[in-house]
Length: 421
Image (tube, rainbow, N blue to C red; front, side, top):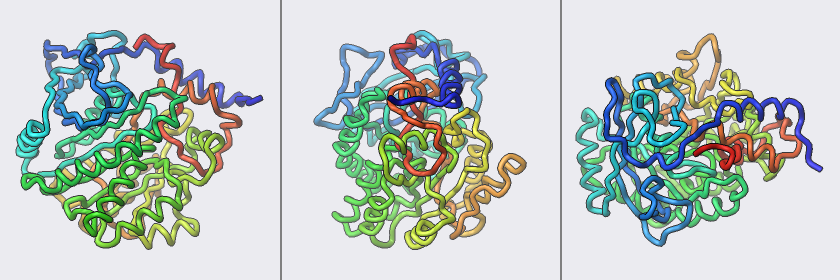
């Protein structure tokens, strides 16, 4: 019989205590504005099935045969704490205290392109699009609000585009989610092709987390095979805690040829959630390798992948899985982009920038060989703390093992039925 250690049980209790009371149907617009709130427009492309009879949900975790588009304006409260999503406990939320949806506009493909052009013109001349691909166990609203938080906290001058694939948002639906990610790779490839072909767009960065790295690498690999190379506008790809086998990732990088985007890999060797995932899924996952050891060190150098090791950063939770939400990391990257500095310019590395910003907390974090800043936003906390508990309690034997290996996906989730969502 599987047993959880006292350490894991304590962590589980901490997580469950911090995540109760999450509202459902938060996509229903709240039209009353709040003084000092920030509104972030999110452009959405999704392979999820629409829910026309449930406008508070908009899109389910089931698969659609076509890609749907929308623009969703998210209001972020003036009291917002960087790295957090202030979920309302019931719907509608209070825009002075919570993330709320201000407006929803369904779009067709042409309307999506028009909205993209309008947003790009507003980004202070940078013409920079950032595509976010979420991980396993994310409902539609999880992904929308997380991207709004990332965009707001970074202060980066980007047009945020969410690619959201059909995750059922249930811990035991890992297999279904994995197949859904694979199902969606053609749609992501087409989206990236169309963004690259849009004259108003000058540069594209891709931010992927956990299982989202699988669909992202597959889409980029397919682009390279079909076109001979990845489009030049896709300059930067950030891989955060990727749930991808290291050998599969290497094979994909080989097929991308050259030139290819600059990649940044974010790892943390003390991530207990990823250690737990290793015990369940097996195999060495890219998200928990030690980039200073062979054969990883040479492979990363060979494929121009810049590792940022956040092991020395103190995590804000007991499982050390929320490090990407550190506000200092967000500010470092946001300030770098806001200054107008080309993120492809050689010089001080992304890891060095983070180390300088969080000095005293993580001295020596991420000294990146190659010294290329390859990511627009170093912030991923793609899921709320409510997601830790169910997975730990349901499937993790000996999850306290800190040995690095599998980064299965988002933090282990708590039972959704236990919360007033």
